[in-house]
Length: 37
Image (cartoon, rainbow, N blue to C red):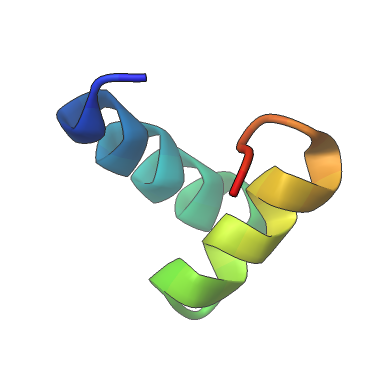
């Protein structure tokens, strides 16, 4: 995935899930299977 697209996606997740930071958003994306680390 394009890095800039990743951050856009993470920002969207932060807004949708009402998480407090990028790290929490990344955890949620991984949990949902949207992001692989």
